[in-house]
Image (cartoon, rainbow, N blue to C red; front, side, top):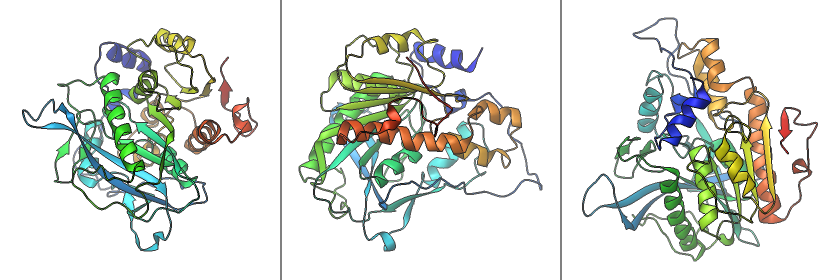
Length: 393
């Protein structure tokens, strides 16, 4: 069974997909090998924007929904992060891509030795003051793929924040690897099995919390101090959303039900279950394996788009090519004993350096156009700067 059919079959059945489903099964080395190096710390590319970046984690509790696992008296909890343009960052340490206690089960779940790597460092300075501007910041929400975590598209998130956006990333608890302020670690579960509609419900609650922040209030359940300037700085009238895989489908579902999101971007979302609602707001799809030609649910959703729409695809891309996987897995490959064939199945033939440029350029151009009315000719058609990117009619 091909990777695309494996993903499609499981998603159609409502199952959650581990990251490993995006790559062929492979056997990590067992025992100690004196030829293999110790833990490495992979490196993320730096964003291209003019502003330093700040970040803060928020613990949100939706008291309108019971927790599906913890039992009576407990409510739905989500860990989120806000990324934003910052100032005076010198004395604020940079955040890790994900906590070490989260990285170990994430690696092990996907077939890697749990101690093969240390978390990469991001450019986000923990708790740094917000950069003051004359206008409020446009907001973009991010929803991750199945059995993943809110840091999976940090390349895109940092890029957007460095260009003046506030980006809110969300861990969908019980379909995410996450750590809560009290030290609890949650991992993806098969029961409950969360679908894209559950992700969308999470996001609509987070939208409520964004409105709280925009109004100058602190939505953090533990009442931890917010970075200076963050409260009251967000523009609730300029909100976009993007998501990867199941999060891409969630983006379409949120936009179909909630007019607060003005523009949406799906990164290889399967659009399952079938979405038949017409949508008149801007929507962009960056596809790899869940294409309109191969996936009827994607073609059906595309046919329902009545506003501005665009579908692009990069040659050589696979399902995980537009996420941090494309740049991190090649760095882990040697230390993890991965063969060239296994690496190719994980990342395809799209070079990581080109994947990074695509991740940085196209989402930024899309949100600049539709949240800031800044026209970027990159979206007008094929560009000599990106010869691998095809505009699908």
